[in-house]
Length: 194
Ligand code: AP5
Image (cartoon, rainbow, N blue to C red; front, top):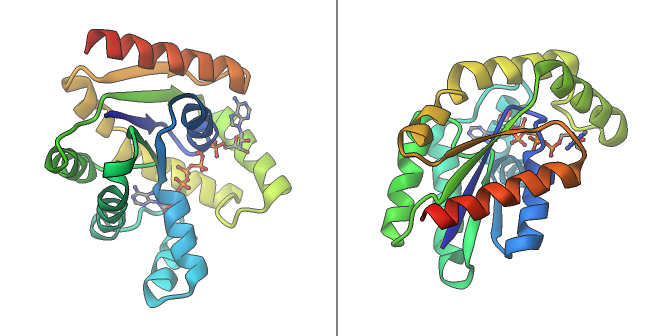
């Protein structure tokens, strides 16, 4: 299986590039942000709980997110050539849990693509999206909280994959197509390395 972790701060282009990689490799896209927003829309008790946390820019608990991902892996593993993880794992605990889930289905993370984008550009992109799409957590205050949460809890996940020799840090500035070409080159390189 080809299993790609798309990693990077809020607004670095994970969702945008996941769509490009799905087109190229036919992988199943698993975005924990999208899945949590769907839970929120469903209006269940869990949905209401996660909505309150997401509105602050804080991370939802590892248990909730891990359970959602495991259920998706079980549902799709037999019918897809691999997965793109977008916005997951976001803590060291999630990274270890993902390794365990993938081992259970006889596979592992193939490569982690780290989209490197300076903070000023992230903020500009997300404030622009606020105008265009009005996503609830794209306010200046919540963006700041999301970036702080990323720096304190998520950035260290990169070192887990670096330690496994699976991390590829890429320039996330440029046109969507330029960046997608960089990501595809990195995926191809990682499959040659095995
Ligand atoms: P999530 O939905 O994952 O949000 P995020 O990580 O903050 O990421 P974004 O969706 O904002 O950005 P992105 O990197 O996908 O970039 P995009 O392609 O959209 O998570 C939301 C919340 O859910 C979290 O705060 C947390 O509460 C919770 N959550 C989610 N996962 C969790 C987990 N694992 N554990 C715990 N809690 C979790 O692009 C952004 C904008 O930039 C778009 O408007 C796009 O058009 C534009 N853009 C993209 N590429 C370019 C480019 N090359 N040049 C210019 N603009 C561009």
